[in-house]
Length: 270
Image (cartoon, rainbow, N blue to C red):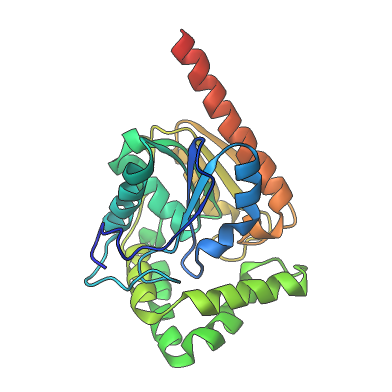
């Protein structure tokens, strides 16, 4: 697929009506990562679309190099194809894409929820190098062994074994070198700190208290740089708070969407 081309993009969709929620997964995952949110959002009257990013899962590999802008513009094309705007939920790398989407296409973003994310790996040379170093590791180990190595670290030490296995299986079945390489480079080349103040969408920032990947400090940077934001620590959760503590995560997410919608309705009534 080419940048912004939806023909090769796999989208998992639930519901036919209601406000659109677009879900953007992390660098080692796929649309399956949002299974714990889909039912709750649909039950609350939302239409949910979760993508397999270009080069991931059931989506085609990109024909050329993709930048963070390309991922954001492709997400914008998804929104335009289905609604005038969307509430955007991004986890980790997906949160970075969501923030860039909000600055490039503010008219398409009704709200943001950014979970266990970061301003990007370009905030320092060591972080950028570590992100790029993942690619040869994936090439050396292959998807299954790479997932076995990295997957357990995405959860808290006390995560149930069945969840650890599900996360590992999802990663192993979702990642492949072309897509992962471009995703990693998009992260390594990005530092969003200077543009956070340009985000106009109301934003909920969440982070697991035991996140060992990006950590609460990175989420605090996001929350501190955004103007319209709430910051929540999710207890007893690692980097994948939406999967490890779905009831708490969903409660905060649905509350955020309700507040955004209610505030907008009151404003429109004037």
